[in-house]
Length: 256
Image (cartoon, rainbow, N blue to C red; front, side, top):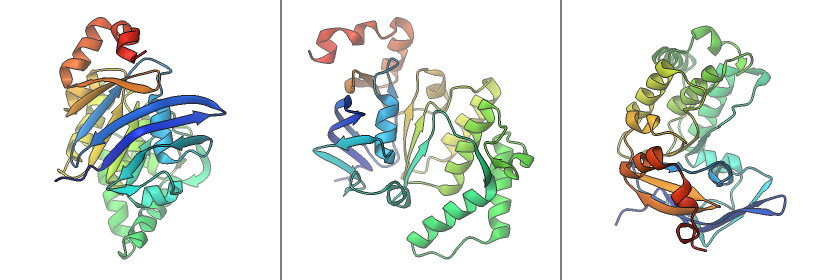
């Protein structure tokens, strides 16, 4: 029997004493791509941040497992070392922190955790340049501070650069498609599709079907009021595109 990469049972989370997640159940198997959709304020970003270990979120669950191991008790860096990656909805600027230096330091930290030797500087630079080129990310941005002066689209593509170089087990991408023009969206979609290897799993938080046309998904989930109220295939995203979220906001859908 396959062990899910991610298993959640009755995940609850609160911020500043206000409950946001009210019992999320989710299984993501190896190699699968899942999409989470829902109206603003439904808890999608809180779910992503809670799994990554944002310190102001208090999370508890009957089960929250990454590759069969409890995840909520671990620090954010331990979660990352175990293969969890979060692509931010609003990537922050880090003046004074060199983009390539941060990436190489993160990659070497992962390799040390895995008992592998540190990456050769030349090989790393060659890989970073190749990925940046495939994403349409100017090479000079690699030499700048993290996201400092980047456009919104450049910040999102820089997140995918990190994902491609760090090669996580589970990537949670929070609205990675927002702020991208048509060409950038195609480049990001192609990069994500190219990272599928039958083992790596992804959870895409998005408002729009357009990303799912580029990265075919195994399951689509609708989140409302801190819970997943409906799951299905791509036809569910198509229904949302036609009808919006009104039907999902009805009391019978939410379970009230």
